[in-house]
Length: 361
Image (cartoon, rainbow, N blue to C red; front, side, top):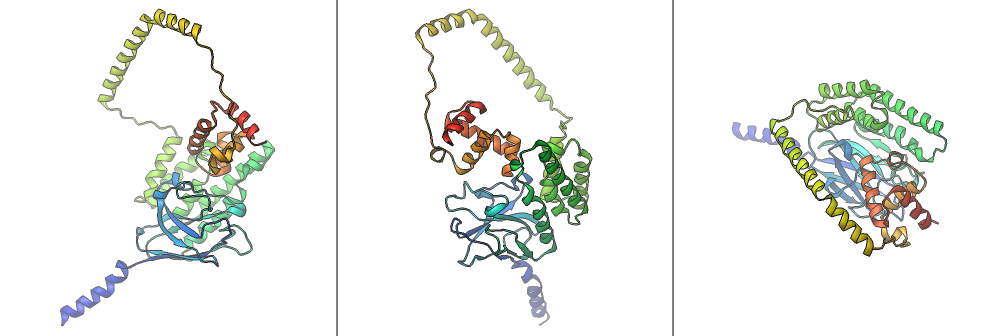
């Protein structure tokens, strides 16, 4: 009898843990251009905060005709992590989903979740955007995430500012507000989201102590978080810190490479006259080939994101300005631009601007 009672008590005690589920309910503004489906993506690296990829998706759910949805499951870790809820336009797929910042197309929110959490996210019916002016019910940290979103997104259209001094003041004001939010935020993960929204390229050198002190805060308060090591690597990169140790075999490889380069230079010197002769012969029989001008329609050869970037290139925006405008990493913009050059047959930015001006007439 005692064994039976003990077994029942153990079952009642442990069963809620074993079946702990998270629940994300809500209502979005579902316009005709949006797919009636909501995606939930796990953000496991800070660089993925604004990146979309099928390998990040952990759950999906249908959206009802009135915009309501519910995401449920028990597959989340027990520690709080960042997750993004977002919608896709009908012309997009899992592989080319776009995140739209602010305005009538704002289609995502970031939340903090763990297994067993329950929150409700509701977009304002007065907005057109799927997640326009949304509100959150649930854990306090998601109220803080909502407050952070209201600082960041309405002020992120820097490419619309025409005057350099006004642009500088606007960027500096946003940076200052994010610093103050970070310092005053009691939740370290929400503070991390705020500091991750700052422009490291622009402000790290002048505010190095601020970024490094926050690294110490992460080590003290969240030593085992998946984001702590990630953040420390990020500030180390921006501080240009090199590893002090170098393996012995590395010097051996450098020696072999140096010897190979010297041998190659020797061979090139020996064959210089022969190469010059061949070049002369080729120049006699070959006429320069002019690049063919192939008019194109951006919609035919470029994705929607690439076409948007090409328009900003045409306007004379720098890579950093484009990254800020589209709220993506600078490396992502560089990758897109290389693909654009290849698709439109441009070899540099000047050629791309010339081709774009003709295409967007």
